[in-house]
Length: 173
Image (cartoon, rainbow, N blue to C red; front, side, top):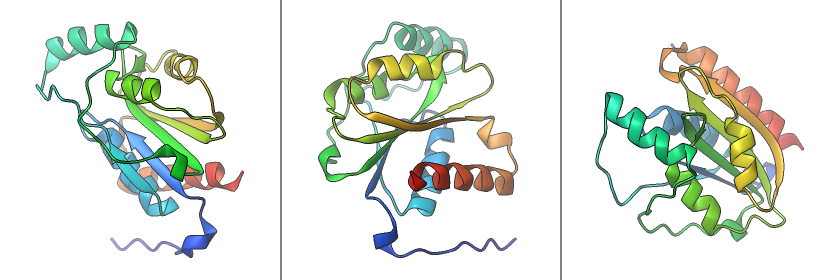
């Protein structure tokens, strides 16, 4: 299948940074599509502890960490948020909360005078994800939020259109 996209000039875009943590690749897939549609730069948060927990151990370990607002030690990164007009934050939903890696980034970052957009990926049951995430962000203006359920099960053309529609909404205002 051939997919045609409209191309815009660089000056048509706000300078945008997509900051995300992805455990199973779903949040990374959304970040990649947003990058394509917005001409954005990306920062994938990587934790120092890269132990891959699976199944029940991920649910207990990750869920506990997320619900308690725990932070994860991050590998060094060089992106400077002050260089961007729009910052998009993305994370999987762990027990209704953001992943610890995103908690760390938020705690270390001053979002004053920044436009923010939030997204999450989940398999069903995001509960109070956005309320929790917004309560941890100390400054910034939230321009929009969206959740993407069952990313890997969604037909690619539907997912592309959903991400494109949201990208257009958050970049318009």
